[in-house]
Length: 186
Image 1 (cartoon, rainbow, N blue to C red):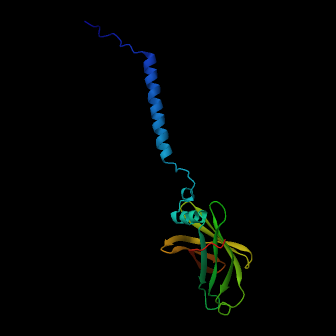
Image 2: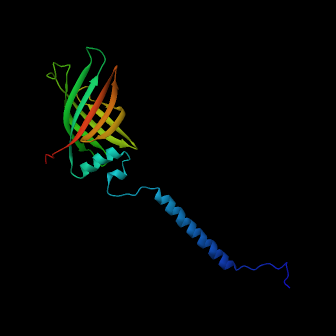
């Protein structure tokens, strides 16, 4: 008959080995779970820009597609200061993650039916998280930069639209940027 008070002997080397194996397996599983939440880095802007429409345009530019733009704006204050404007140009890549529309000659309807003096403007379009931002640089009107608010980007069947507004002084101006694919000049 066995003694009930006898301790069961365990080999400490085997117990430590099993603990180490368990910890290694747990560590590997933790690393796999953690790394599955990190986006993979590939040679694509879509992985760095979280707004899918913005990323699509930038990827097309990176793959030698060219885009023209038509920019309109409207302000309604009163009959004297209300206006619409129109300009056209090209969308370009500014740097790795940003786009620009440079050197637009903007015409206004309150200047004798688009016949009067014109202004020079540029737009910088950038992605910040899932939102798209636009900075408007007014070269002619005081060489100042305005940030558009409530910016939205939308893909349509034949192109893209970016809309937003800017308040300058005592008026708000609403902007629409129509972006469409065109033949590359070079």
